[in-house]
Length: 122
Image: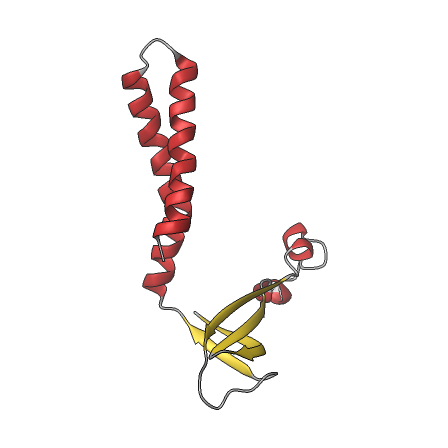
């Protein structure tokens, strides 16, 4: 997957890049009436290391392999669901009589997975 990013600032050997998150929405026929297309017209801004011969206002093309994209999507979507399921099963083993304890244990596992993803998966 390739995407073009606009360089909006260069400072301390870091480029600040901006991209429209809804680039795929413009080619869809339902973009004017679709809720996702309406709400997704926002820009994402992030930093990357400076590349030679790039100036402010220029464009940089970044590419991510499909296998890495699949891995990131798995980490973001499937890992929390698996963690919810596994901690729910563990909660049912630990709290055989108390259903509220099972639900709380499952939700704790679910939210811990988000903390794990945010701080440990780069």
